[in-house]
Image 1: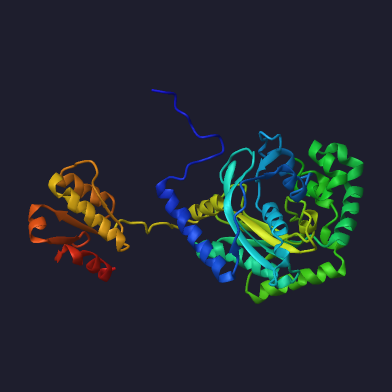
Image 2 (image 1 turned 135 degrees about the vertical axis):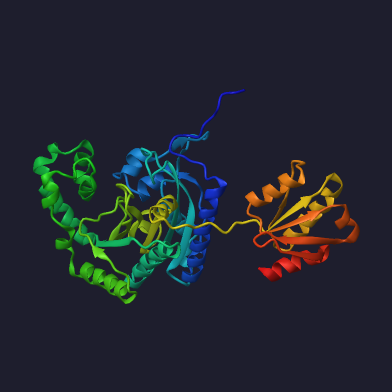
Length: 424
């Protein structure tokens, strides 16, 4: 026997009993997107590396440390996508969606993303993200709609212990004033901070506040707050977002230290946390915010946007912590037992006919005896069992047995599907 090959570190297999949960989550998400009118967009799994350098930002951890980048045979630098927004905005610009008469363009996506990180609970190197982008409106109401959709996803699967945290990162003018104050604050003692923070000082000092290494440094607690530098326009916008959230009855907490890890955010930033016990250190389920300059950075006209991304793995982890069961409904309806080889062909066509009527059906493919087949039907949780022997073939009638009560109903072969559909 050859040597076992195992899956790469930081990846995992979704086995059939788990995939039923994934499918239920995906169905609920698709239904909510339909209700909210966010249309699906599918972009490539890899893009030109420059897209993420420009779109996500050179000073971010993602671009500096976490991307899977490779040269292809044409010597082009390509990167497996580490997040979804840059690709969606690239597509919005490339396909001139800004020219559509109805703005904002409301888009949703779901698929694998890739980051080279240290694997831990709820954080893997390949992970699935669901996200939405609403591009082409700077109305605070669309910010509230996007946040409301994210909250609704978690509620729809039965999560209750949720906390919405919001902040305003202000417009460009407010950001520049705050940036200068931060540089002034950290510069005299920057040599006490890690190398990452030192390189961020002049490029993007806001990211220093997000540092995991130096989070307990005394200067962190006294750093100037962005809230003190919001100009009137930014304050009015933020009040508008809060007003719409209140109108929807959505509770929130304002956290002036919430900055989000990507360079393109401004104005509204938000995170949804799980307060479930035993969740561990990373409690963020979902993050998002407004990015009013990103479309221009990627070569498009001025088109303000807002979006969020959520990890499906973290959502499933939160369900586990809150002990919410989903994905239970994939049970088998009918197991067809063939008494011997001579009746197997009839059993095979009965299974086909049931499936053609939208009824899940299965049979034995290992030549087992009737008793072993009945055990298999039981293990698979079949609601009904049909046994086909010589007698049934000759009479054209068969007994449909309801497993829960042991009741039997004698039916002609053609009437089986109708009887099951009637009892559903």
